[in-house]
Image (cartoon, rainbow, N blue to C red; front, side, top):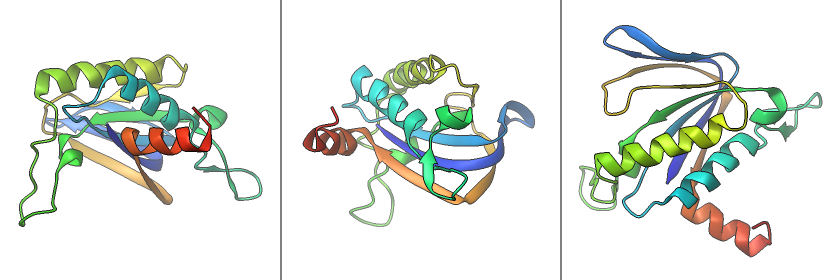
Length: 158
């Protein structure tokens, strides 16, 4: 499971001209789900997203997380994050989860993030969406549950 985090001052998502989700200061999280992903990946990534220290403290250092700043989160399913571009000029999406599996895991991910008590908004699964992002910094970070879990285990954090 992959998550592309963008720190924002505000963001919104629209479907057919209707705003279906919006947030103030916080994160936009674009989520890609692979066929091999599990609820464990979703739990791990949700925890990582809300506790990753990418907000500046009073000294300007990245010492605060979304939890620390009561950040708002806009979560959007985006299967194109699973695109493989190693061969040719067109991405292959063979590693992406089928829609039913992806929707189930995405909803589980959303539940895990909501359980933190932070404000959470979402787009619409499988809809064509327009996302307006006011990137703050800009700060953009890519997380991959499989890579991150192995690194955390090696460091003794799991």
